[in-house]
Length: 140
Length: 140
Length: 81
Length: 81
Image (cartoon, rainbow over all chains, first blue to last red; front, side, top):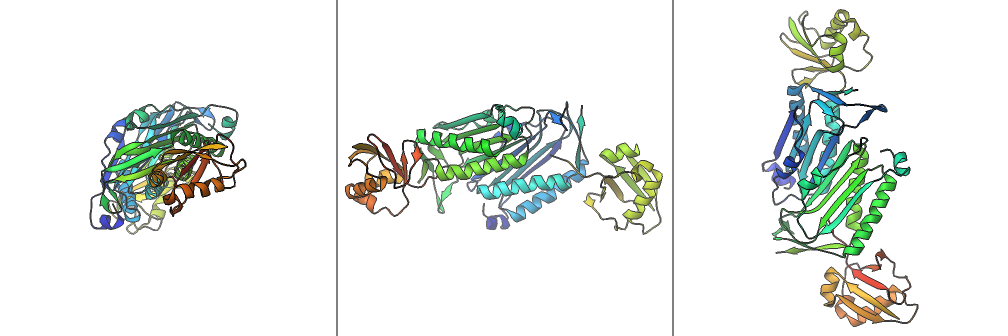
């Protein structure tokens, strides 16, 4: 999808979810839908590390102000769609206790070319960490 | 895994494959193994677009000089491991006819933090496109 | 006027409170609300970290003028991902 | 001395040949091999694109001095991904 096609109103897939359930990564990958213009899918998987400040931890307890988090994520996606000709943005953030080694964030951006897919994916993570009201605390 | 730990000889997973078979993306995702230091998995999926120079195509026929391609990929991975504290690099490149909408390249880099995972993943794709002997021709 | 104040994460731990109703003169700002909350919750006054403010689902600056019934949220810097 | 020459992708299409054995004076370079191949395969001489060279599994520059039995590969710029 070109930026022009996008401005012409071709639909952009947007799937945003904040959930206490484990993130079904393989199912999300299999659920990808592509247009004939799609050439690149870049994904980022955030995993809870087993240590925090050099101490072993059981995991991280994530808390969200869910309605605001979803609203802010939609605003970020609006901006992504203005900046880059993406055709799909899918993001799942887990809340509650996420054990060490488990996935806390799954994000995928699909675009015609890899440059814009990487740029949009990285920008979205940076902004998520700046404005989306989600917090975490180590669980020893 | 820190760069130091890496230099101390902790093993780095490396899985490189050039294959005529369809790329089993979901199985690859499920086959990911993580150390307790892993915090980020960045993946890139290259998909064959349905058009080439504005003409619809059936797909792309990929050809590789396979032994040299694998050798060059290993050299690139050596360099990735020197530059970034990655703990896993997995790459599958398909050859033969890859139909429009199908995956031609699957690449994943796992590292402690997202910055190095993104950097290594992007660098590896750029270099792959520069030095790994694989070619493609549109199939009308 | 009255506003609802919600605390999240470490600020909820500090205040020991998830939600409180605060009564303020009409035209009060978020900064003025903060001064009242600091008197009401001593540990909040001692909080050395940054505080983010939202009214409804949007971030607002300290000079934001509150209105009757506003839903105000206070929280520390976010850390998702 | 003899070297084996392999053509890939568009260069194989141009020459109509996947592999050829070339006989050269000892001490010949890749550039000298290229001149011979251009005489043998006229379309190769007319190839306007870049040509990459490998000996064995490594890239080599035109000044590379060939040795008996070298496996030489010629191919156009790579396009994986």
